[in-house]
Image (tube, rainbow, N blue to C red; front, side, top):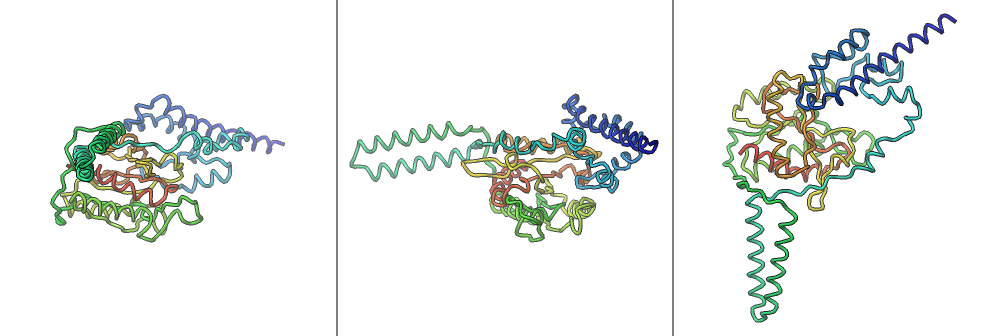
Length: 383
């Protein structure tokens, strides 16, 4: 009887500690949203550390010095096996206490409420000039073809004016200069594209074992290669695309493996202006990662800034600059900037951006369509 009582007490203590920890994770973002958005979350970690000190297992599971987004501690796995609670998943604690919550599919409810974002691109001066040229050409052709019919000419003229008005209503003209095509200089590349998680793939059908691929013509590698072509062919921006595989045989430690890759290029090419670690997000509803532009589906982007990076304030400034161009040219296309406890090799250069292009639920075609959007934003950021 005493043993059963003791086991019950130990179980309650474990649940109590886990509950307090998860409540802190939930409450702090509500109380201090602005501070988190500014990347100042570490200043409030004192509460987490106090709880961690009360339980050596939790302290071991939370590694503050070497945190990675894909890191899985053995102690966390054991804790989940013994208690059924996933420390990284707040909902698992609540469902262990209120079993009815397990029957509610929150994801499906969210998916029904949120649909793809409709993006109306801003038109820069070069696009306005192109549109006016097309309209004037159409008018001239109409006049030449129907020179013997004055009434038809008047109708064509009125139709052209109507179309022009409709076009102006659909877009927001921007007073910006067109992006000039640079003179390509392969000896002085301006952009580096690489992949810490090189095997990330797009799998909209959720087929087994297809979230990752070693085929370079698929997944994020294909997106990186198409982005390189876009930057070089359209904007004259010399670009390096490194396809070194960093996440095999396992994802854990991928950032440590990609670190020498970055260091090599940073040392060799001081001309680099933007360094892109190109990923795709995981386990995020396609409704959140899809945009509709001119009735076609595109994969949305998101930037990630590591707050454990000692130079994260510079990384944040650079990420805000790039995200600002996204917002200006393609309002609401970007999902914004996510601040996460990590370094993500951003301590090696303030020019590094971690760019998530869609998620595993998007199609490769949707990601490839986004290349033109990303290319335009990158070229504008450089110029």
